[in-house]
Image (cartoon, rainbow, N blue to C red; front, side, top):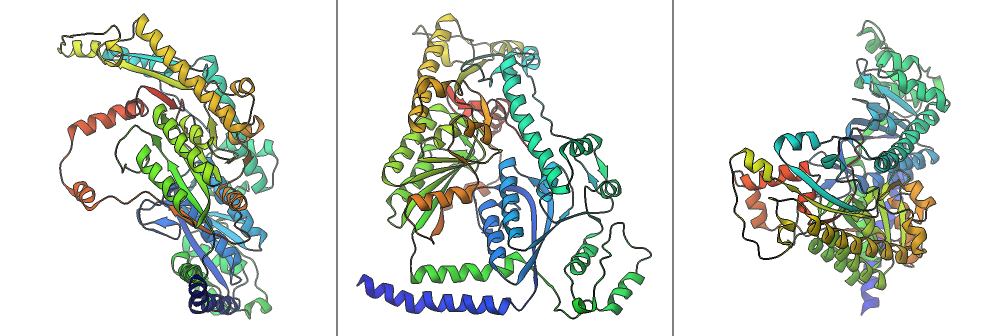
Amino acid sequence: MHSLKMLAGLLLFNLPARALRTWLLWRRSRKRTVLKLRLSGQVVEERGGRASLGVTRSGRVHLPSLLRILDEAGRDPSVEAIALTVGRLEAGWAQLDEIREAITVLQSRGRTVFAYLERPGHPEYHLATVCDRVAVPPLASLDIVGLRTEVTWFKGALDLLGVQAHFEAAGEYKSFGEPFMRDQMSPAFRESLDAVLRALHGRFVAALAQGRGIDVEAAQGLIDGGPWSAADALERGLVDDVLYPDRWKKAIRRIQGDTVSRNAEQAADEARPDLEAGDLQTPVSAAEQARRRLKFRPAISYLRLWGVLELFERWGVPRDRVAVVVAAGQIIDSDLSQVQRGRIALRPLANQLAAARDDPRVKAVVLRVDSPGGSGLASDLLWRELRRLRRKKPLVASMANTAASGGYYLAMAADHVVAAPATITGSIGVVAGKFDVSGLLEKVGLRREVFSYGENSGLFSPSEGLNEATRARLREQLSVFYDAFVDKAATCRGRDRDALEAHARGRIWTGTQAMERGLVDATGGLRDAIAEAAHRGGCGERWDVVLIEPSRPSMLHRAQGLLPGVDARAVVEELADELSGGFSRGGLIQARMPVDLRFR
């Protein structure tokens, strides 16, 4: 019976779809297309709603979909160029490097990539340096001035409010509590943060130098001289063209040798008093004039058909699957089966892992981690779920922008760990503590009377600090958790415990630094991790990639989200969560990265 179903699927779906694909490729090979893509907003790992070929309706860029678009464009013979319009981007180093790598693959297949930067800053320009030509508007400012991070110290403000911070950490580099307890960085904090930031800045400078064909010293000199006006950036070779968007399209036509009516072009030139600075003046030969005209097509309409054809091919002859499960955001203690985007909780992620584990079509799983950590207990429980999955199917971890502390805790459960060179990872350590607000309560005229029936009953109370007894108990708990964290990391990594512990102690590393120290197995992106998982799962030369997402909110949950009104308690909790870096949501012991590094 199964054989008959396979035969029917092959005849009714697979073969017709493959024949149609072959015909479309032949037909398209006779056309010339420039694929239009616009990137703007936050680059996300989770779809979080209906996404359409890279960009969701809410303006977010879904990275896996974008990578698929670029891959399909490289395989289509009619696509000879990509016109990439880049707005303001919110993306991490690792995500930008993955997009850059996908563009490099496109170029190796003979495609030309044009970039138009509307508001060029560090992330936008870092992405553009890998493109063949970079254009900016005439009045744009190229805001490359060098990477910079600022750590805010809250102790002075807390002192004025009468609030005292009490934190203990396992690991000399585990510096999460420092901004609340100190006036300046400890030497360990400064050493760790400077090493990572210096490495990231070095990658930015090297990318600029390679992309613009200059040496590293000259690239650093241009950064030191920034920001640059559009005209100055053009003069110094930081960009190739300075022109308005409508002229950019004409410039691409000329560069690609499009057939453009001389009369129409002359009329367009006469309609403006002068050519914009940097407008392309590449001469077009008579032979080139005879060629077919380029067609500019948006990716959303041009590539939709490929998805339909792939669906029919899968119906006809199902292929082995590699499942991708995304763990993005803070790790929180929660009993809920559904949590908001940007949060990782036990039940939702465990359900996704169980779905991958129990699906016979899924031969291997990729865990995509983008998390600075959070609750130590939730991290450990999720680690256990991942180890259960690993016993049944190959599990490969792919680190995105951040996979540190609790995020590393999840990733280390895998058979094979792949980190992007610019991933922030490591931070193997834990921290615990609280804020004593008794002074603030006194300032505002509030008074509490306490009934205590245990020596350490005040450990969790916000109205008193840590005394010697409670501090000693807290240190003991941290030591137990830290030892378990290091022991499990050494076991998962197959390393000597003492050798691995030397690179733990709460210190953060880039992906490259982590590989050099044996904390990860390889550097690469999501596609590298998927290929590794497919190989380990015995998927052959072709496989399907499926994204296993959390269950959608119920109708009641969605209706509640539409109701008017503000929950005052929720607002206060959210404010406290922001001020404490999310500490209030994760429980007492936290496996959390000390700082939140954002690329602006």
